[in-house]
Image (cartoon, rainbow, N blue to C red; front, top):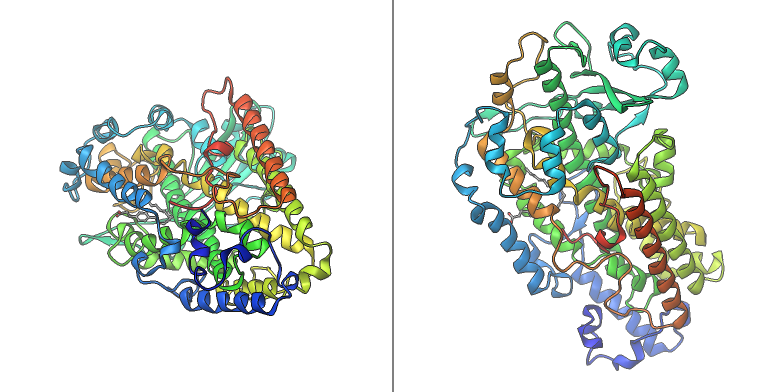
Length: 577
Ligand code: OYP
């Protein structure tokens, strides 16, 4: 059985496998010269196999491989995963007869109901709910809390200078008993600001320019109606051509303004929340771990199951999704140069703290927001993961010095911070691990990001994007400059065309559907650890995940729209899609 553990394969014939199996050992636990020599040799070999590459400047480094075919067999998909991955998109595009529609380049749908023509074959209960409720204001607000991009909303204490909204404008939504300045003071006003989209170059698809804008959206936590939008400005600079859209405007104008916000969401969600903040961050850890920690190292054993398949899916993403001729270039407004510029902007301001959910919620001032299920579930999972890694670390490190003196661990953190996260000034992860606590926090961030955070962003993408008008991947006309001129024809000419809509549906289905051979969080199919104490800690972790699952199921009972993305049974151990 041992021979099937990928990391052990190369050792066979080199040293008796029995010497290696089982007990986790730090460098200082190995005293035999032969064992130490093999430890060193293993790392030398791995560093030859797994090399850093800067795919582009200004984003994290990745694995040096042109395509997934260059990757060592140990980190490739197995056959089942490969044929499923390659078959699934095919299935979405061909079997579901979208194919005839995909060739309708540049052709607009006739009206909003027309989107149903592609909708009826691929669908999910949530997607159907979206189709029926996407125009409602409470539902628009709800998606900032429990949609697939739940990390943008922040408390607003003061209206930004560049947002031309006034108290008078929103009075109608607030009701007679209160006003904007009271509600700002009371902490019930929230803001979603897409400033980062300003100046991002836009795609040209088959000679047609696509458009982006950088909206500001003000929201109110209404005592009865939940989180509702109060006002939307589609550009960062106020002016005559940049009206402040309000719920009381002509219905089509308000609807189009909300669609522009949702289109901005698509870009931020896929490129920043999903790709950069989960896939690319975890790839850094993956490469550093393969290069710096031998397979007997306790931290290697802890991390390996959480890094499975990530290199291959990311290679596929680089060659097929964000490449010069990839899916983004073909159907998304940030395709081409835009996606890189946007990712670089985010990477400049990305902080290690923002990857820690407890800090993130505090920093955004959203700890009190009601019905923020993403926050509730994230915090339960973060606490469970944090306790789990704390106990595992305690088993192998009896004090801070043992961490700071573990030369392999120090080489690992150096590789992470100096190579992987190169060119970041603000990130805020030190290149030395001085204490057990620092090690625990880092491991918790890694486990949380590759499991829970990835599930929260990835698994809902079909639900929220399948009804294309709710989350359009591109816009084919510029944003409206006045409220009175908005017509249905203009909306249909703005939204993705027939072909683009089909691709959006097919890809989000392909990536968001439940993976057939997923390994859920906390299930370890390859037994890396054999020490009874470690196995006990793993068992406790699993038990805690069962408790969380039960709490989530209970909380969802009676809810019209359930939030299930963070059910432990639906979270994968690693980023495999
Ligand atoms: C890899 O067979 C990945 O053509 C997705 O990338 C899609 C392919 C390959 C193409 C499949 C094929 C996975 C890694 C990643 C990531 C995060 C960002 C996902 C963005 C999804 C965007 C959907 C676009 C819809 C228009």
